[in-house]
Length: 208
Image 1: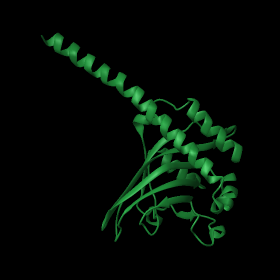
Image 2 (image 1 turned 180 degrees about the vertical axis):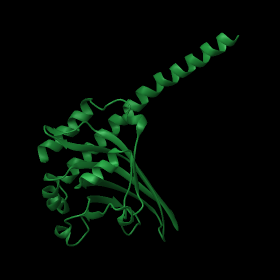
Image 3 (image 1 turned 90 degrees about the vertical axis):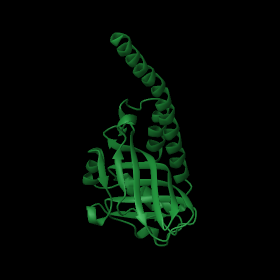
Image 4 (image 1 turned 30 degrees about the horizontal axis):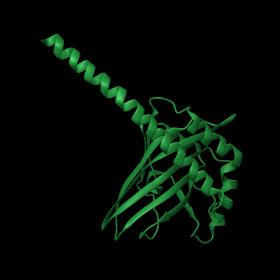
């Protein structure tokens, strides 16, 4: 009886893994395709003209195809993103990191935003790669926001990260104080080397 129960438990665990792997692969593929679409969007956004120059000397890029903010009085935000860093031969294999935060304020409505973080400093990149990093001046990581609606976009030099943002909704703007970027261990268990990953790396290399 005990052996039967043990076998059943093992079979159930194996079945769970077998079902989870294709679902995870599909989620990876969708996230990579969406990230590639964001890179295409950057080609047409006039505010990103200066940021292209910044990216030439950047350490890495972190792309969040959809950051969702929602709430009234209390707001929360979160999204899944893709990180690539520079190598001697172009851009690295993509890795997956989640972004999330909670903020208080008179916020209403729902906002979805596309984000690209241009990572300028080694300490910011190391912080992300260690598994978790908190953004904001209080945490020692400064973030400058660059958007198509922002005036004086050409003055946004400096900062550990420069963020290109394109969003819609009732929020007055995006702030990143207290935001956490965390390693998605499940998604990173198997390296992303498929056609979607190759397409994203090739697209980035063609621009920067």
